[in-house]
View 1 (cartoon, rainbow, N blue to C red):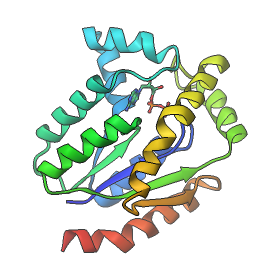
View 2 (view 1 turned 90 degrees about the vertical axis):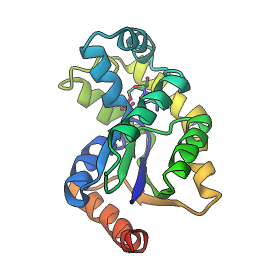
View 3 (view 1 turned 180 degrees about the horizontal axis):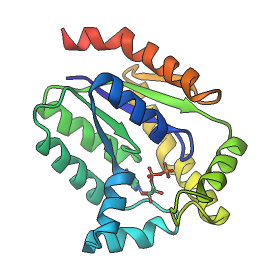
View 4 (view 1 turned 180 degrees about the vertical axis):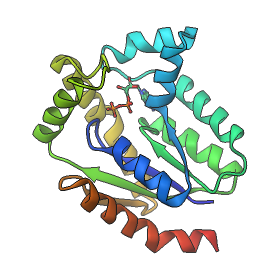
Length: 196
Ligand code: ADP
């Protein structure tokens, strides 16, 4: 089993690259943002609570997202591996994920971190807000709150995986294909080792 975290700020291109990576490597895509938006569109109680927090640009509680990830892992026992996108986003989530994967004897192989400059991020998110229909994308104040949450709570997650030498930075600016190829290169140097 090959487990990978695609890491980066909101707007760094995780969603776009995840779609291409799961198609190429046959991994199961686990995006907590997508799982939460699915709860919102189904109007579940969890979704209604989460929407209030997401619309302020804040993080939903760790227990909620850890619970969703734990269920998703249980629902896919035969997966070739998982691509985590937008998770873990706090140190507590990272510790919880490590425990869940320890049980499967399939730890995180690598964290690929997309590096994009601050001004480029705001530009991309504002532009996405024009078409995405996401209420957290069409207000610059909410976008700035999300970027602050990222710097404050999420950036330390990279330090957590850096302790075990698992973080690889990849340039997140350039064409979608160039970035995809850089990500594939890093995966290809590791995936055989894990699957043997
Ligand atoms: P983006 O990376 O563009 O912010 P996501 O779809 O990953 O988009 O997340 C959207 C929102 O969903 C976040 O701003 C946050 O409120 C919530 N969210 C997603 N994943 C998590 C998580 N792992 N922990 C807490 N909140 C999360």
